[in-house]
Image (cartoon, rainbow, N blue to C red; front, side):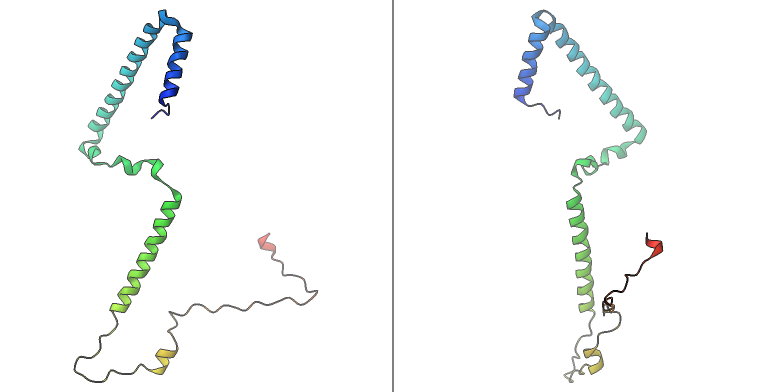
Amino acid sequence: MVGINGYEFILLAIIAVVILGPERLPEYASQLARLVREVRRMASGAREQLREEVGPEIDEVDWRKLDPRQYDPRRIIKEALLDDFEDAAKAVKGQSSAAPAPPVSGAQPAAPSPVSAAAPSAESRPPAVKPLERLAAGEPAPFDIEAT
């Protein structure tokens, strides 16, 4: 919670005894206990006030999901990429199950037409890539005024 382990706490207690002395230490310890009680009372009061204003829905909120320490950008990106992959896999499975079933009556299945088997449709083909054009020796590179 605070980040103080046992050894650090013992060291702080020894330093407090040395600095404050045995006469004033009980007085400061009681003040610290009073401060802790007051902070706890204020926190519980704020919690009750929030519950009154928001209503019973506040008990249904999963506060662990809203914890900012759980947000790891690498995990979020990985999950987003896997979701896209799963969506694409579902789409491919949906297309393969939508293929027409073979005839049941024992007739010969129709052979696929040579045009449809050889050339994929225009929607499934990737766009054509324009070949690279090399500049001739000594030719200046193109300059775009709007880009600079």
